[in-house]
Each structure stands twice: as C-alpha cells, then as structure tokens.
Image (cartoon, rainbow, N blue to C red; front, side, top):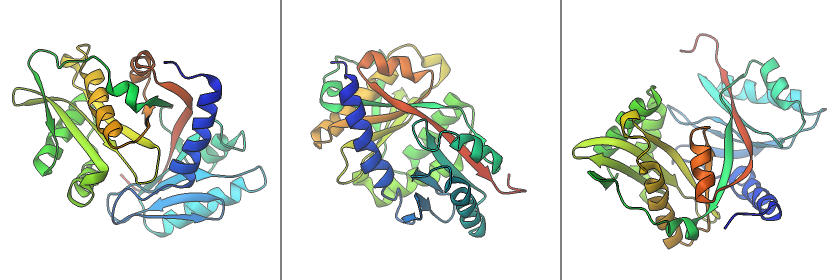
Length: 269
C-alpha cells in the first residue's frame, strides 16, 4: 500500500527525532553527544565521524559549522561528514558548508517502507543463488569483495565498522551475502538500534554481471523479514538513483533528499 503525504510527514518527524536527534552510537568505541545545536558522533581509528542532526538558523549556522570543524580537526580526524537533509535550515546551509571547505557527494533519497508488507514479498532466489548470513571476519571480507566489484571503490572504514558490529553487537546487525556457488555476487546489511522504529538498510550492491535478476529485491525482503520478526515497523534507506526506482516499486515512500558533505583535513589522503 502506497504511503500518503500525511503519513510520510509524520514518519519524517519521527525519523528525525529517533534516528537523527536521538542518534545512538554505531560502535562500542563511538561517542554521540549533543553540543550546542548539533548532534555529532566522534570515534577513534577508522570509524564514522560526523554530524547527524542540526537545528540552525541564519544567525547560528556559520559559528556552529566553524565549531564542528575545529572540534574534529582538533581530534586529528582526517575527514568528517555533515549529513545534510533538504529540509534542514537555514535554506542555504549547503552553500555555507561549501564555503567552509566541505565537498558534497552525490545526493541520496531518504526512503521508508513498512517492514511487515515488505516481508511478504513473493521472491525466490534466482537460479544458482543462495543466501549466506555473515557472522565472522571471513564473511565481512567477502562483503568487501562485493563492495569493490559493485561500486568500484574499497573503503577500509566500512570493513572496520562491520567487523566491530559482528564481533561486539551481533544483535544489532543483519548482514547477508548472495552467493553464486563459492563466489559472492551481492551483499547488504541492516542496522537496528534499540528503541527506534526504523531499521536502516545499508550497503546493498550487486556486481554488474548479476544485476537485473532480482537479487537486490531478494535481499530487501530477507532483511524485512528479520525486522518484522523483531517488531520493527519500518525500514529506512538512503537510496542511490539506481536503487530508488526499485524501492518505489516495492512500496517505499520518499521522506526527503540527503547529501553527505565531506570535510577533509589538509594533506589527508
């Protein structure tokens, strides 16, 4: 069933309150704190550093941006992300971030779907495909192999993050591989946080030669069943332009557009 505008607006308000303003750390080493008019996460090593949420206006924006740059630079972070949503204020926040040295990455569409409905999708694995649940380092390495093949880039930070979750918070992650025999061809994960109504779908990618066979849809349904069994009502995705039409056909609705603004320290690789 398609979500109407009133439902989507209510879900966006709830998402902002629970997932952004009420953000929880994504690893045992990470620290989430509300400082001034932002909620941020800082973590040593290869973890994610950045701003989840902000409540800024024209008078406060530049000073708050400068304060966050000073904080993360002072910690020696090579980079951090300001996750900007198109409904965040002030209206020119993106321009202000660029003026402060941030570089925008491609926009993504914030989408939500009802877990119970998605769990009932009539999907079967394509011929020759089996699913493998990831529970150890070997599985994480196979996921990174898929990531490199699907997106053309290797990101050690994601590998470190996945390893930390698999080892220390296995109850909060559901990671899965689609295997063609002994070869990984698609991978995805779902992150769940206690007390929130949204489970996040992340990292869904399929190597080029296996696209168009329904594997992405299969992995969405697999994770939806897990969320529904745990009583989590909604799935959330930051969708690429490739994923958005698939998710819309599955019944996901649009809450907004998000752009990762990246700040990189001078001299960082």
